[in-house]
Length: 352
Image (cartoon, rainbow, N blue to C red; front, side, top):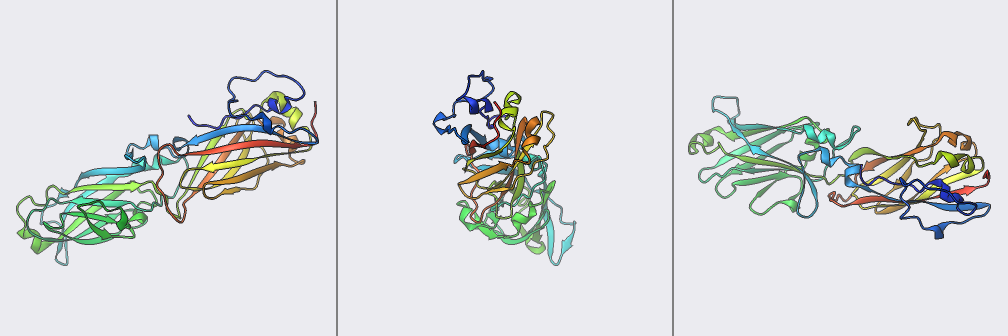
């Protein structure tokens, strides 16, 4: 997958005492040898890598997700409400006049693990095209965990209705109908979203024939995570540790992988580092979780003297990133990245 972090081979940590051949699979373009410090305690660069949107969220697996002109990612579903006959279910003077079912199955592909799709401003747009008459309406939206209800009126002056939590996003030509519960209708990523439009029975009987046969809908969910958004994504760094040099570096003492994370995406991060052997099994080494809030933050993972012997079989790294929404939501945009610039600090115990 493109955008993965490519690490400098640990052989460069020993460049001061010998020369070595570096496999071409390593990205050496971002190595700054000015950062190399040698002594009883020394520091060497591991490299810099960028993680793209496609690596964090599998938008390429979700056909409904489009990129708008400003680069924003938006899940978008369009269709026509199917008109219902007047002899179907009625309730207190209202009857179901049109319905539709939207399949949201593809949204489950956004992440490999379970997630909470809490978005700031999903909205439903209705275009009735009503030229004469008036219809008082109730729209039932059946989702999960919530099934919000909205009330509005179709008329020649209010042909188009915008149902959603935020008035600031309403497009010209639409009448805003606020519903703060709508985000909860998709929070648990239901397989479907059911739309049932109820209309005043007496008013519906006075409408011209076919007046309700072509009500267009558009459900849009900009990928702007709300504060209770939760997801997990894992970045795999293969061959982070060259087996020829693990014995030199991790023969004793302590080591710390540390550096700076720069985050352009609209999530706060909690980063978990896992060390894996060649087969992909996790080594019995635990590191404190590292929080990166806002645009940048520092991370540090210390391999203690007690854990150094366990590094004998270390080959790969997994960075498990726990994504959380922010108090002020922003929309995920094409081209945004999460970048890491990491170094290795070694204290004592080098075997040469």
